Image 1: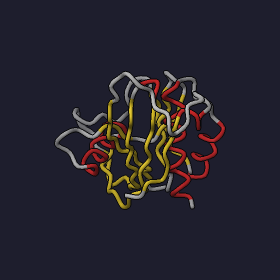
Image 2 (image 1 turned 120 degrees about the horizontal axis):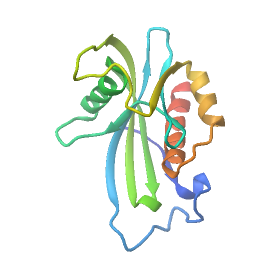
Image 3 (image 1 turned 135 degrees about the vertical axis):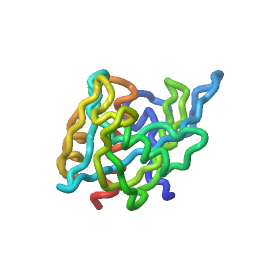
Length: 171
C-alpha cells in the first residue's frame, strides 16, 4: 500500500518538534487501524461526528490480532454503519506521530460500497453513543473537514488523516 502522508504535531500547529525529533523517555505504542470511504447507493460518503472532541471521522478502527486489514474494515463497517460492505480498492497509508500520547499509528485506507443493511443484535444499525452518522457527497465531506476545527488533540490528527484519504480519492 502506498504511503500517502506522515503527520507530525508540527504539521498541525500542536508542537514545535520537527520530523527528526521524537519524545524520549517513554514507551511508544504502535497501533494499526483501518479507515474506509464507504459509499451508499446515492454515492454519498459515510461520516461520523464525534460529539466529544467535536470532530468528524471516516468509519474504521483498530485491527485485531486475528484479522486481516480487510476483515477489520468489514467488521468496523458492520459495527459503525450497520452495513455489509464490499471493499473495492485501497487508498493508501497514513502514518501519525502522536508524540503527546506516545503513539505511532498506521492507518490503512480503503474504498467500499454498502451492499446490505445488517439488522441483528450483534451489528447495531446506528453508531456508538456520542457519534452521529451522516452521508455526504465526496466534495461536501472534503469541504466540511477543511473548514471544521476539532477541539481535541486526537481530533486534529483524525481530521488531517481522513482529509488526506478523501482528497486522494477525489484526485
